[in-house]
Figure 1 (cartoon, one colour):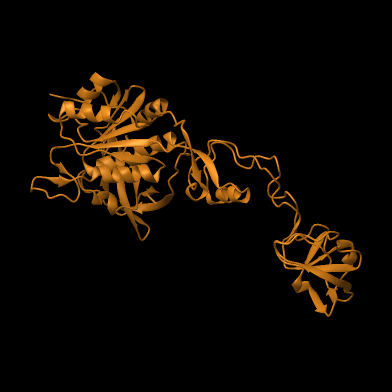
Figure 2: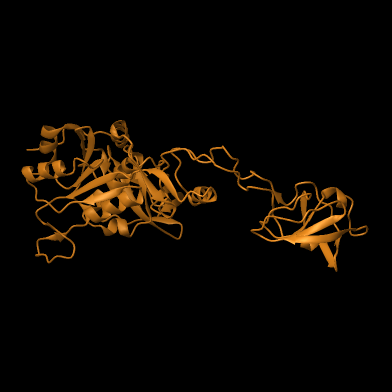
Amino acid sequence: MRTFRSLISVDEALRTIDEHIRPVDGAETVGLSEALGRVLSEDIVAGFDVPRRDRSAMDGYAVKAGDIARASTSKPARLRLVGSVAIGQVPTVRVSAGECASVSTGCFMPKGADAVVMHENTDLNDSTVTFYKPVYSGENVSAKGSDVKQGSTPLHKGDVLTPAKVGVLASLGKAEVNVFEKPQIAIVPTGAEIKKVGSSIEEAEIYDINSHTLAAVVEENGGIPVVSDVIPDERDRLLGAIEANRKCDLTVIAGGSSVGERDLMYDVLSKRGEVLFHGVQIRPGKPTICAVIDGKILLGMPGHPTSCLSNAYIFLMPMTRKLARLPERRLTTVKAKLSRRVVSTLGRKVFMTVRIRDGEAEPVFKESSAITSMADADGYIVIPENVDTMEKGDEVEVLLFY
C-alpha cells in the first residue's frame, strides 16, 4: 500500500521551493503599450531634461516676481502686457521690468520672467494687468529638469512598470523598452476521466477544470501558461509530458500526486529526478509533491479542483512571481467574526474559504472536488496546526482573493 513518506509543514515547503526557484534571465523588447506590469531588464538613463525648459504651471501672467513683491488688494501693482506664449511655441516675447506676458499651463516661460500669477488674482484692462497678490521667484513654474534631469536614472533594472513608470518612459520618448521575458509555465492535466471543455462527455467523465484555473493563476501573476492536452494516468505518458515541457521554466501536473493505485507521480518523479517533498501538512491539498528535474522545478498538484486551486494560491502563485521577478503579492486582509463554529484538523494547517456577509466570515467550503467552494468565497482564513475548533463569534483575519 502506498503512503506519504513524511509530511512537511507549509512553511518548510515554501522555503524548500524558494531555494530551488531561479528568476528568468532572458529579456525581450516590447512596445510601450505592452509594457504595463513587465519588469525592466535595464536601467533607463534620461537623454534630456524633463521639462526641457522652464514651463508655466498655471494659466495666468508671467512676471518678474520683484515687480509685484508688495502687491495687495489695497495697493495693487500694474504691469504692461507685452505679448503671449502659446503651448508648443518657443517664446519670442521677452519680459522686462514693469512688463508681463500671458501664458498657458505647460507653455515655455518667456525670457526675463521668473514666476506666474494666476488669472484669479488679476484684472486685465486693455494692455494693463492689475495684480492683487505677490509671488515669489519660481512660483507656479515647473523648472527645467525638475521632473527628470538629463543623465539621471529615473527607472532601474528590476522595476515593475506601473502606469506611472510607463508615463516616465513616455516622457523620455521611449517607444520600446527592454524587459525580462515572462516565465513559461507548463500545465499538464491528468486523469482518464478528465475531458476537454467543450467536448461531449459520458456520465462517468468530468470536464477539465484544473488547467483553466491554474492557467488563470499563472497569467494573473506574470507567467505564460502552456497548457497540454489531458493525459491518462500512465507512466510513459507522464514521462512523455515531462520531457515535452523541458523548455518551460516550471511544470505543473494536476492529478496523480496522492497515494492511490493510479497516483503515479511519486514513482515517476523519483526515477526521473529528485523529489524534494511529498505531502504537506495542509488542508485541503495534502497530496502535493515537488521535484527537481534537470535543474527545473516540477510541482504535482492534487486533482480535486478546490485542493488544486487552493494550493495554487499558496505555492504556484509565489513560484510564478519569483520566476517573473515580480514582488511578493501581499493579499488584502479584513477582520471579521466567524458566523458559526468550525472544526479543524490537529496537525494540519487549514485554509478555509469564507465569504463576508454583514461583517461575518461565513465558511463556504464543501469538499475538495467542489470548485464552487472557491467561486463562492471572498477569501480564506488560516487555522493553525495546533487548533482543532474555532467558535462562533471568534475574530478571524480573512485574506481576500481580490
